Image (cartoon, rainbow, N blue to C red; front, top):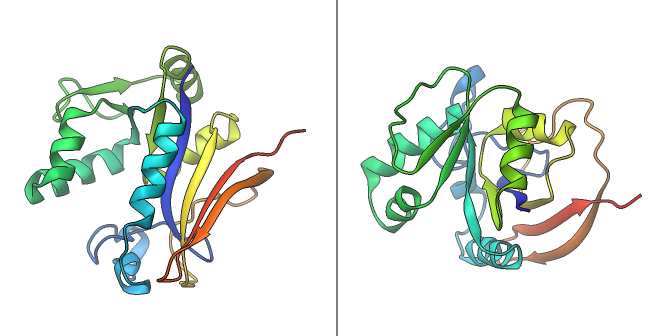
Length: 198
């Protein structure tokens, strides 16, 4: 069975919207895009942590995206090029969407339809390795409620924004336990959480 691992950059107050660049995600009038590059000196500790989590879970089986994140990554990385583009193009991508239609515009993409929790539960059951989620806040919220997320790898930046889309939805109650943590020289806390055992 596969493992679903959320891998996201967040601020201290839980904002996950638009960490990469100013125009990345301006929904809701968000004007703080690019905070991830401004809040701390870049380092590769986050990349190493992501690699360790995928290796510990049996390797990367694919990426799991909501429609908006899928379309944004397609547009951004295919225009930018480079090794991350090649890695995304060659890796299996599963997209949860009611509005996308086949054929999918990105190589190695599979559309998941119907009830989100049921579709992802079935995918998880037939997959081995890590199904990684990046971005995709609405998808994360749906899977969180259904208890389908096995792990959260959070890169917590030393920044409070006070506004923006947050990783954890309002009224979410998800007991977690810290299983790994480190602080980078630039002040980012890399924390790995798993659901707390009853």
